[in-house]
Image (cartoon, rainbow, N blue to C red):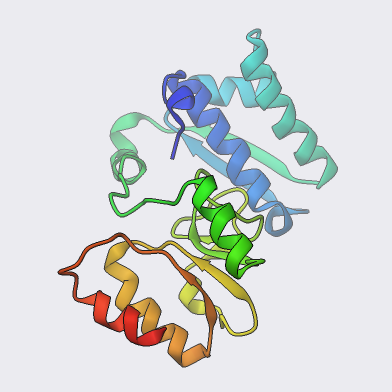
Length: 200
């Protein structure tokens, strides 16, 4: 998800930034490989290949170039007409309405009581409170996606999940003998409240 400032940038900046972010987040997988990147933005193709006169775009292009050079990655950027890219375009416009988080002040207070917390299990690049975090979708800094594929035992977890996953999380915490802090909205009629209170 883009910050308010990033959302106001041009589509070329956003797509070029996406190339950089994916490259950086998958650098170990892409090392010593030849990859093909498809974009419906002709400017992105040109900028990755030749650079840009705009400093902001040139900085991103240089980051892509330098990381490809350092990690022996050959990147071919190919233009795809928009009418052939409708599915991918649709997916990129999906908004995660379940995304929410706690503010820094709450985290610091709770961490002083029951911390230190080690892993932020349900976060993203914009709302994570810890360096180690898992996210719903792949992001540059996340340790991975789908926290339910990891055994939570042994780490003091920070849980600020989508409300629709609360019951599943409580069940999985029991299964893993996990411990941590589960932050929930105050929703007195919620079906998960009894589960949360009984888990302790």
